[in-house]
Amino acid sequence: MQEKALPQENQIRSDQDQPNLPQHIAIVMDGNGRWAKKRFLPRVFGHRAGVEAVRRVVKYCASKQIKVLSIFAFSSENWRRPEQEVGYLMNLFLTGLEREIQLLHENNVRVRFIGNRANFDEKLIAKIAEAEEKTRHNTGLTFLIAVDYGGQWDICEAVRRIANEVEAGKLKSDEVTSRTIANYLSFADLPNPDLFIRTSGERRISNFMLWQLAYAELYFTDVLWPDFDEKELDNALFDYANRERRFGLSGEQLNERHDAS
Ligand code: IPE
Ligand code: IPE
Ligand code: MG
Picture 1 (cartoon, rainbow, N blue to C red):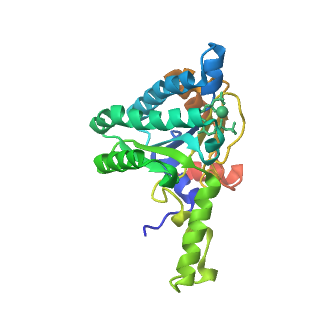
Picture 2 (picture 1 turned 180 degrees about the vertical axis):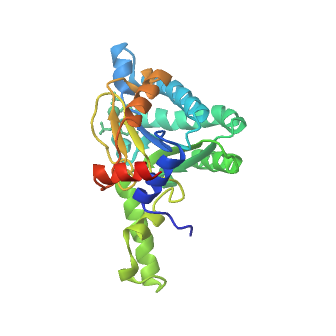
C-alpha cells in the first residue's frame, strides 16, 4: 500500500506548492430543507436545487485547479429520515450520476465515492462502479462523493482491517501508529482536507471525516446550500488564504520557515 505522509507534513508541503490555495476542500452541504421551506415547497425541492449548487461548485473548483473536492451527500445517520425523503435522495444520486457523468468525464474530473455501499440497491451500486471506472484515469479535479458515509464508520473499518492484519500475523500491534491508521482510511492516497466548509449556519461536523479533518481550517456560512455559488466559494477561499496554519508550531517558527524560503 502507498505510504501516506502524516497530515501535518503533507499539508505544509501543499502550502508551498500552491500558496494559500487549498488542495482539498471538504463541504457539508446543509440547508436544502430550509431552503425549500422558505419557499413553501416540500423538502425534496431543496435537494433538487442543491444539485445545481453542486454542479456550480464542481465546475468552479475544476477551473481553479483545486485537486480534491469532497461533498457530504448522505450521512450514515441520514437513513433515519422519512423513507420517502431517503428514496428521493437515492433516486437523485442515480439520475444525477446518469446525467452528469459524461460531462464530468469530458472535463477530466475523476469521480470517487466513499462510504458504505452495502445498503444501496444494485442499480446504484453498479452506476457508482461505472462512474468510477469511466473516470479513473482522469487527471483533473478529484470529486469525492461521501454517501452513506460517517467518520466513525471510516475509523471502525480501518481498525477492523488492521485487527485482521494483526490476527493474520502480518502486522504487530505495537507497530500500529497514527500513520498506519491513516493508511487504512478511505481516500488514504489523497491529501486530507485543508478547508472545511459548512453551509446553513450549523456549526458542527456531523460525523464527516473525523480523522482527516484534524488540521482543516473550518469555515461556516449562513448561506443555505442551494444558494451557494462561486461568489460564496470565493469568500471561503479568501478567508482561508488569510489564515495562519501552524500544525503545532509556534508563530515564530513559522516566520523562520518563511524567511528561509
Ligand atoms: C442537506 O440538507 C442535505 C442532506 C442532508 C441530504 P438538509 O436536508 O439537511 O437541509 P436542512 O438542514 O433540513 O435545512
Ligand atoms: C449532514 O447534514 C450530512 C449531510 C450534509 C449529508 P445533516 O443535516 O444531516 O446534519 P445534522 O443532523 O443537522 O447534524
Ligand atoms: Mg441539515
